[in-house]
Length: 462
Image 1 (cartoon, rainbow, N blue to C red):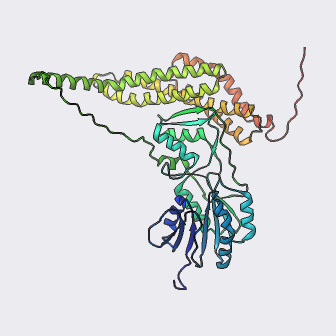
Image 2 (image 1 turned 180 degrees about the vertical axis):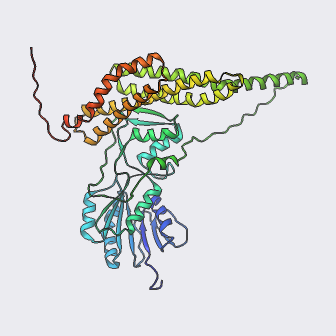
Image 3 (image 1 turned 120 degrees about the vertical axis):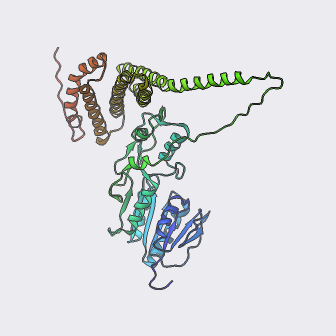
């Protein structure tokens, strides 16, 4: 290399999934040395195999050294040698780890030994369903493979999802930023999502995605380092999730039937009548199928919504939440198939009757969605109030926000005046308590002592 050529970049990533994607971007602007168990053929890349032991690094002068750490003991032991190498060549040194493997002790020692050191903490990276082993990718794998996901307890475990492309962009931004040295950069959403909220985002694109709640302990909650600086200015998680294809693969199979020996022959006229009957039956079935699906799912959704109401009245909030979510799925399918039915029956002049049914189903779906929001907030508040550990104010405010949105949705549904009389009466009886609840919610954090310690005097009269 000539003196005017830029110094190469060294990337060390034993697993290689994220490092390989990063090298693809870095090699377009600089010679990149990639040390990994994965091969990376390409221009401007020097690949060095990394299997059991860290291989010998070329004695080059590097502009930037990027080390990926995922709990490997050999990398932890080799950090002093990388720090020495960076100090000798005055290179910028980045330690890239995940929120699952971040250790404050290692970060402090890292900063103490080298002035130009940086730490990049990645969130729950997802890409291509099985590319990276993370809790988010496990949920995506379940959705892709089985069309349903399993959540522990009430689905209130916390996630910091970030796509692989955005993780690589965040690492690149941290590598070339002009910020002060000894910084911790966070490549993830600043505010975590609950597992249930994450699945709700997936259901916007895939409404038939089912959710199962299992008994068991929560996953450990991983907290973002307090001094971390966001590496991404804005992050649209819903947009990134919408790019994923979670459609289950279609398995094709062919069955060959052999004609039994000695079977009687069928005349041409008999074959033609049977073919005509089969075609007419098939056409009738295909025309009637959307109507059958619409009616069956509408009835099923209504029964599930009624069941959720009874379970909520008995205090079985978790069971009521499951029933309400299933009601949303059924009524969403009924609402979508009703459009097809309206087109088909329009030929015989029954489109107005189907349109009335669709309006009723759509109103029921909105009630089910609002009920789901109410129950989700109720389950979250129940968990907060009955938990032995002190709940955070953010969790409480999140539950309050969901309650307000649900109350606003019910008011909107009542104003549209599309519900049957029985539902209208139920909503009318809820107006006064809902109004009192909404007015009380804004003051509840202070009343419950989230802002400061509160003392109350209770007087009882015989």
